[in-house]
Every structure is written in C-alpha cells, then in structure tokens.
Image (cartoon, rainbow, N blue to C red; front, side, top):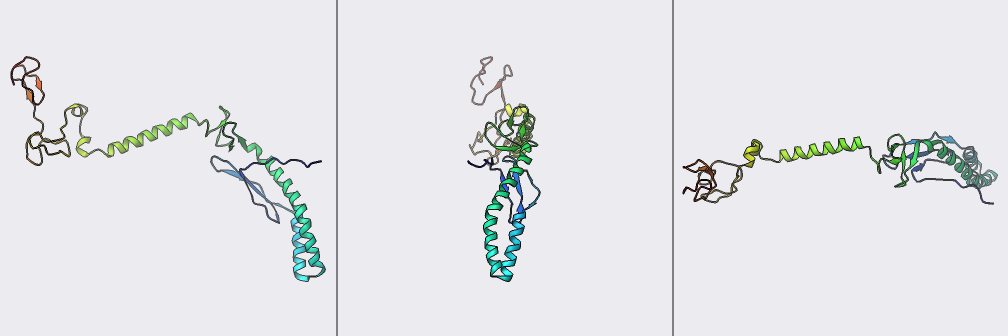
Length: 215
C-alpha cells in the first residue's frame, strides 16, 4: 500500500538543516509571510554525534558514522516530511488560493473577502479610486509644468482668441504668444472693426459680414 500523500504548495522556502526543520510561507502577491519556529531534529543530533566520533577515533566509530548517515537519510526524511506537513497545517489558515488566478495570497493584506478573490483579480475600489485620482493629479502637474510661463497667464477667453504661429508681415515663426514680432517689430495681432457698424472683422476681410460696407 502507498504511503500518505503530502499536499504542498510553491509559495514556501525550506530552511531545514541536518540539525532541524524550519519553513517560510509567503504571499505570491505582496511577498509578506510567516516563518515557523526552528524545530530541532533528534535524528540529526544523533547522526552529528556519530560523525564527530568517527572523525576523532576512526575504525569502528567511523563505520558507525557511515551507518548513522544511512539511518539519517531515511529517518531524517521521514521527520522532515512530518515537520513540513505540520507547518503547512499550522499556517494554512493565514493563506488562501484565488479560484481565478490560482495564486496563494495572505488573508491579511491581499484577499478580498467581499468578492472571494485575491486583490489582484478584485482590487479594493476605494484604493483604486484614490490611485486614479492621484495619477490624474500627477498628469495635470506635468501638463501645467510643461507650459510656457506666458501661456500659463492666459485666461480662458484669451485661449479662445486667435493665436498666430507666424508674423503677418515677415512670416517669421513666433515662439510664443507675443504682441509684436521679435524679428521685424510688426504688430502681430491687429484688431479690425467695421467703421460702419463696429463688427469685429477677421484679417483679410474686404467687406463687413454684418452691414456689407467695404473695409
């Protein structure tokens, strides 16, 4: 008949030595976890005594040490399996496996009780909303910082006004929203109004669109 099956997971580290057993179980999402107390191994201790005796006296004790190694390889493995099973049982309540992504996560920080899923699959909405707001604020800060100083002073009405890219006289490119061309000194923004009715005219107009008078 086969022996008892030992259930195991991948979210652990085995810190066991010949002297005893110790394990760490950690969350696949945040990396936090728990370490079991070191449990001394009687088999390991006895084998260690035989090793010491063999190295000092040789002969019979050396052969005894060889026997001790063979005993340890069977008895130690059995004790190791029992210690691992006990550690898994002890810490199982602190972890849960997500049915969607199959990750083992800690209940304390990474499990969404309301949804029955890990927070990687079902994040806390409050946390996500706060993160989204912070991200938007950062984007706005960078967008504002990237603006030229003179553009920051523009009101909403001025933003709606026509901003020229080139001088109307010499056609030199304008690096900013200026009133006069830095190359030829020409007035960049010329406000034209109909002499008859006062309607604002667009540059190049030949007749007033309101009263029809010639400009």
